[in-house]
Image 1 (cartoon, one colour):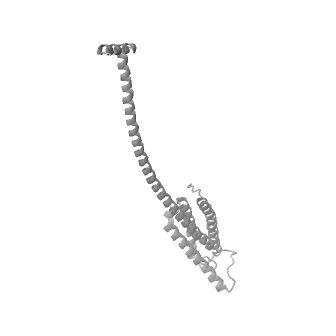
Image 2 (cartoon, helix red, strand yellow; image 1 turned 120 degrees about the vertical axis):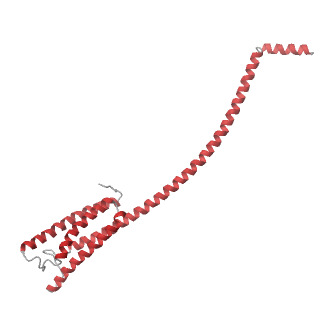
Image 3 (tube, helix red, strand yellow; image 1 turned 30 degrees about the vertical axis):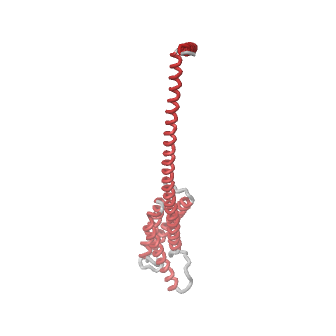
Length: 224
């Protein structure tokens, strides 16, 4: 086959396929798809690399946050345990004041049997015991105020003030039955009325305080 015949065949094929425009269009479409696939592959590789980098950064941040959360949780646990311990200590101290308060001389109160001097000494000792227990509780309350919830601290402070008010009377009349300052019936009656009133206030306050402490220790932790 000579050169002329080759060109004739080529032209015939081109004509049969719709001309040169169709070939050019098909070639352009093929090259476009090829370049698009290559660009897509490149984007896929870049996205994969970004995804790996993001995953690594996310894992690093997650670990840091977890370490911080663990530290905060540990500190919270220590703080809670400390609060529980301080609340327990405060309650024991105030309960001792309650026992001593009820042990103060009152009409009808029974003291150790014995001579009049022994009974007088027992009444005097009960007043000293009340003073000592109240001072101990007040000191503990002042020292641990920042270690216990504010509402409990405030309720305990109010309760101790009630006892402090009675302590002023105890200093003046450690044994009301023999005190020279209570020589008249009117003075003695006013003294017993004051003691009874303060003791009732203390009993009401300590019940409220006990309820608040129980709620807190059970996890309620409400602040009115």
